[in-house]
Amino acid sequence: MQLHSAPYVSQPKSRNLLLRLSYDGTAYHGWQVQNNAVTVQSVLQDALFPILGGVHELKGCSRTDAGVHAEEYFVSVQTDARIPCDRLVPALNAVLPRDIAVHHCREVPPDFHARYSCTGKEYVYRIWNSPVRDPFRDRYLLQYPRPLDAALLHDCAQAYVGTHDFIGFCSAGGKKDDTVRTVSHFSVIREGDLVSMYVAADGFLYNMVRIMTGTLLSIAQGRIAPDALPDILAARTRTRAGITAPAQGLTLHRVFYDSLPPL
Amino acid sequence: MQLHSAPYVSQPKSRNLLLRLSYDGTAYHGWQVQNNAVTVQSVLQDALFPILGGVHELKGCSRTDAGVHAEEYFVSVQTDARIPCDRLVPALNAVLPRDIAVHHCREVPPDFHARYSCTGKEYVYRIWNSPVRDPFRDRYLLQYPRPLDAALLHDCAQAYVGTHDFIGFCSAGGKKDDTVRTVSHFSVIREGDLVSMYVAADGFLYNMVRIMTGTLLSIAQGRIAPDALPDILAARTRTRAGITAPAQGLTLHRVFYDSLPPL
Image 1 (cartoon, rainbow over the protein chains, first blue to last red):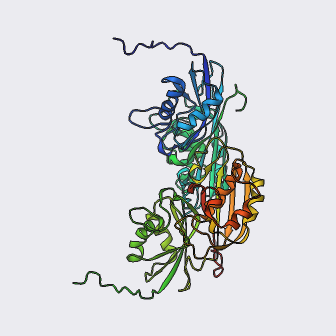
Image 2 (cartoon, chains in turn purple, yellow):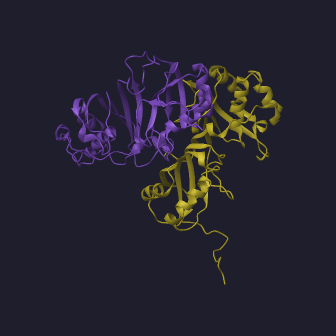
Image 3 (cartoon, rainbow over the protein chains, first blue to last red):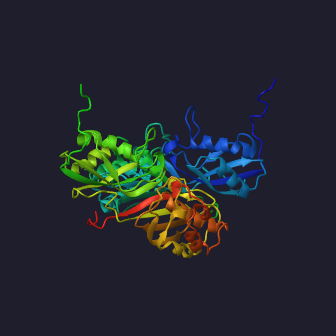
């Protein structure tokens, strides 16, 4: 009796679909499928099962951490299913929970891969700089009650820009074989009580954005000197950088693909 | 044995406090205390118990429905507790759930009453006019996928402005003895996919805003003629108006008191 008769060597599929999603990550243990934890990937896989017919391997653009949000997230999936893209989007939104939305679907070349074809990403870390929380956006913000000098933090953060070995900004558990990344910009912007930190790079190490923003918060707290970032980068050890800022303030904001026109 | 030795005739208290709150109403069965249901009033009363010492009668500015939100909400409470206002706010925020925030506390004259002293309120009903939901704001919006002509609805809604008997815009269960209200403005504004309906009046009947906005949605659906609103108002019967729009799109936006300077 052969219950598992499918060949382990996967056959080439006839179509490669690219989905653009957004999600509120509060309820999820990140993107990637895990045992005994609800993840965005597992929920999307279940929702796609009846639409595409069977289990499909989903390639996500990034492994976001538990509790991290995405305003833009791309998933590629190879399939033989024939459902047109403009019917797949409403069918999927009808079965997905309301904290995940699918905005767009398109066919892409067979060798396109949501993660490996990605040429850069931009994250935003949002801080609610007030002694009183905002009940409507609390789950997307880190509340920080003490004064924050956004202009000072912006100036400090320019030390991150450029090509550096960010091994000192990587949590234990991250791969450590290639830890050089190029940060193309880091902006700290205040709008009223909201302080937003935007950072774009060709790639990010495990927890890298949260350690970069946490280190800026350590500067704001006076625990790290404002001019210390170049030395901390050069030290190449996790113990010199600041705290790992909480996940809920972090949102994947934009994902870049050189090989595709804008969606 | 006298377990209940407190006099039923309440003594005058030494202070009258006015609190300004905001809350995400998703998890609550409205403001007012009910049996077997969690309400904003019951949660606030429990949070105030150890801070003010004992159960206090809270006067809310409005009975908001289950699932309705408030960006501005006022509560007055008479107390003999001596805690200064600037210590009460952080003490209360520390124990309240994160979907309720207290922004301000002040002492007001003894005869001030959050509800009876209120001279007007402004609600906003927010519609997400897109086939795809916004996972980050979904709980505060009604998703409406078909096209909406915001300019047309704005023009229609001007029939609401002025002093009218709104008995036809009141759900069963509301008091029907005085149903004349004065609407000072009704604005329908589009910003991208977001259509916001702002309505201010000296007071609102039970479900009145939800029936006013629902009637505009019935016009958008072609179920009610765009020029029918004056006749529907004059008919003075609930059966002529449109649907009662869902609670989650409704937010109490501003509360007006003539007798107090702005908080």
